[in-house]
Length: 380
Image 1 (tube, rainbow, N blue to C red):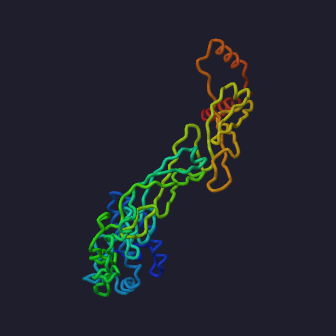
Image 2 (cartoon, rainbow, N blue to C red; image 1 turned 45 degrees about the horizontal axis):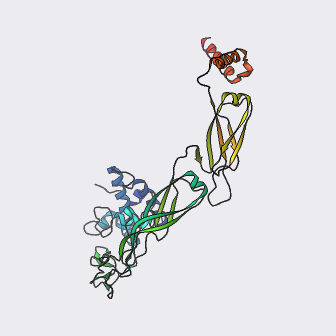
Image 3 (cartoon, rainbow, N blue to C red; image 1 turned 90 degrees about the horizontal axis):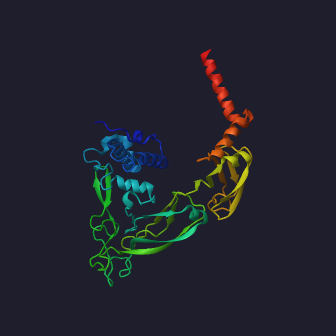
């Protein structure tokens, strides 16, 4: 089976620079990522092809060999791709994490990343619900998060107190080893220290050499006024502690605003549907609306108000995040038809109907007149 050209796979030209390659890979990888296409074999295949192409072209030496010899440069022991589609010793998940860096979750599954021989802790997610009133005023919330923290006994080193990790004899502390294969010198993670550059002969008994222990922490989260549903708040360094003294991950607070009984939100504006009586709509009148700030606002209904009419209360909506501006409140009128009429009420309405003229109901009169003209035209 003939393999597709790596440049065509990424949708770039042979003159594409490193930035163009990275941008093209990122866009396509997001589109075909298995997490976004569960059960789609074609998407998974395409994703592996993208990783294989990017892994090859991002490395100047590999790219030069590919430009000169094509796919033949890596066949018959010249390179060796693993089943995941990445270069031997890597794997497409490593490429994906390299591209997307500190995106939420620290890569697929919140995997810890290596930092100078230490492993960064995973990012954590916390889901929080707040009311529309709390979104209006803002709040400081206290949350409890079970997470991994640095072991106090060994101060995060993973070694028993009084001892310390030693430099890995296999990789001499680099965390990587090199092996010549074909045209290239292949660098792989050290199998002895697993990329940490150090080994622990006498591990800490409290954390079993991990350098961290699990504990529930209480954190204070500031929710600013005007925050919207779906907003993500990042607490830097409040995620899992890193392995053996590595940097901590981040904690992401995902906010959802619960639906309100009276108000619907659209950005900084609020909408409220208010039913009024038929007589108030016909004769005019007033009513009071309680806004989210607890104040009352009076709405004047002019004579002859129709259903669907909107009244705007300026500055009575939601705060605009991190500003002094306020949205507006829109009141939409719904006219309620009287129910359970008494005999006298029915008589009065019938009398009113008999006395009504076209001028009293211009919309309905005009509508039925236009409909009649339309069907008269069809019958001609």
